[in-house]
Amino acid sequence: MELSDVLRVAGVGLIIALLHVFFEQIGKKEFSFFIFFIAYLYITAELIRFLRLFFDDILTFFQWLNLN
Image 1: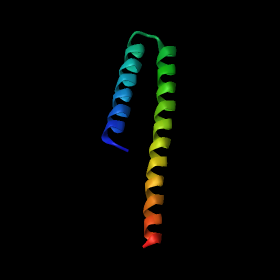
Image 2 (image 1 turned 45 degrees about the vertical axis):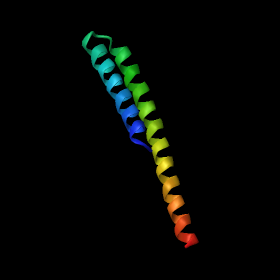
Image 3 (image 1 turned 120 degrees about the vertical axis):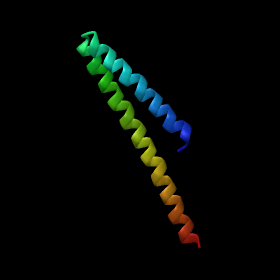
Image 4 (image 1 turned 180 degrees about the vertical axis):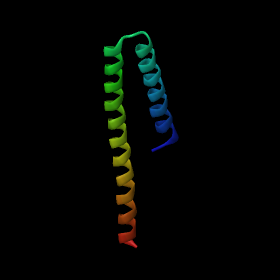
């Protein structure tokens, strides 16, 4: 995981948050709900990807310990 990955997720999160607030303010509650739902799915997928990368690094570390 690199800093660019974290910044990409943060940028997408900010855009989605601004869209969510915009639709809430103009009274389009159904659009606001769908934006929230899409954001929830996106962040969940990214967190699962980050966890996979994290556990791959942990596995590599334990394999390195096992070789020494």
